[in-house]
Image (tube, rainbow, N blue to C red):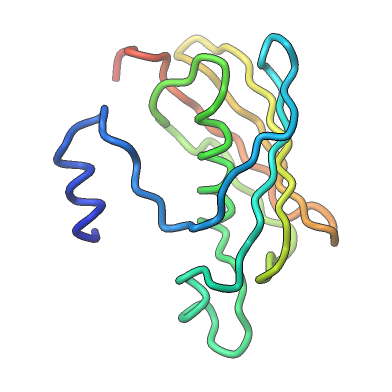
Length: 140
């Protein structure tokens, strides 16, 4: 754990999450009720992860794609803290300079909210991810 991540963890659940991904998430559309949304994230060549993943052939790691989805989903209808990554299936590589288009759908479930997401590049689907969030202020 980095010092920054340790500081956020020590500050408690209300502290802002520390992200290893520099890409900014831009929500481009959302339905009136907020249950579906489209966002994008530009994968910059300067992402620190590219230095070691892999030298001479940079690939954006799946966990970083998942982080982009998590950050987009956190802007959902009534989302609390992330409680589970229920599913993550990666289909194609993401490279520096790619734009991830994120399509998200939220639905209430017994224990909070579920977000089903697809991440795609110009080459096609890169990942399908399902996240579960606790309700705001909900139980652990």
